Image (cartoon, rainbow, N blue to C red; front, side, top):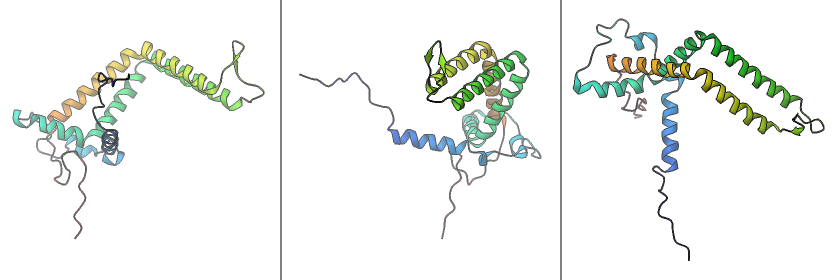
Length: 187
């Protein structure tokens, strides 16, 4: 007699809610939401950066995080680029990884059914090569670049949190709480 197993928890959110949240995040991170240098740094404003009162600190951070989300992703990219440039050995490892991926792509392009690529006398198909390169890439990046990745994460997070906390931006009223522009009323 079969019984229903109640030990498996149901999913926390329906799939359509997850897809909807993913779509909203994709919309927030869209390049059209990239704010200019004048808005991001508050150039020309009286007090663009100031410590907020306790009552408004969290709401300011939340609004700024959503409003400047694309700018913060750009901060992560810039910090990452500079960190990798300042670590030449990790840059060399990344170039070796890129060369490995190029070699695997060339093998796949030149492979035929009559002449398959063999490793140790056994044929290796394209998906097996890609999984192997993915594993090698992951191991090399974590082993040789773990400290670089950690510094990129901490520095960019600290900069983003400091900016969102201190930036006294006047976010336009036509943006709702999630940072999406409201559609104008059509009469």
